[in-house]
Length: 136
Image (tube, rainbow, N blue to C red; front, top):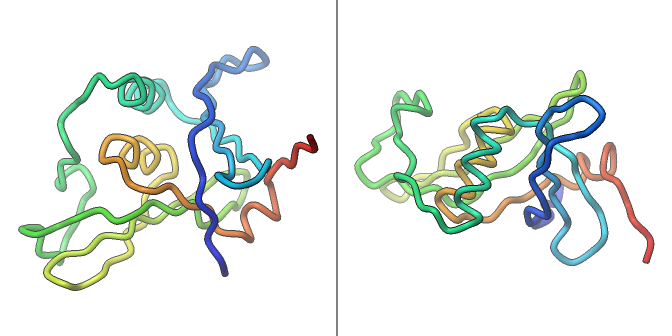
């Protein structure tokens, strides 16, 4: 399925339930995904968006096993599934000319993507299933 580039439109606390929400907007259109995140991920994303830099991704935090991390590079983050009212993501990483897809919670993946400054993508099927379209 095709992947669509997204940008972070906002990070806000929902007045309805006081949970934090990251709003992703399709880069070239008016489709949105609303993804609930925890306070720590919301803070990380807000800090990075306001140019207050924090340390780069620590590979141990990702629980990577069986991957040579000496030349590890994050290429992109993709929101690739929506099941049971939860978003799921994968990290596309390369190391020594090999590509790896690593499953990661969506909220954590977004925080990492912003911290490392890599593209955020959404699977077209996810956008078709739960995306919100705004007409101009």
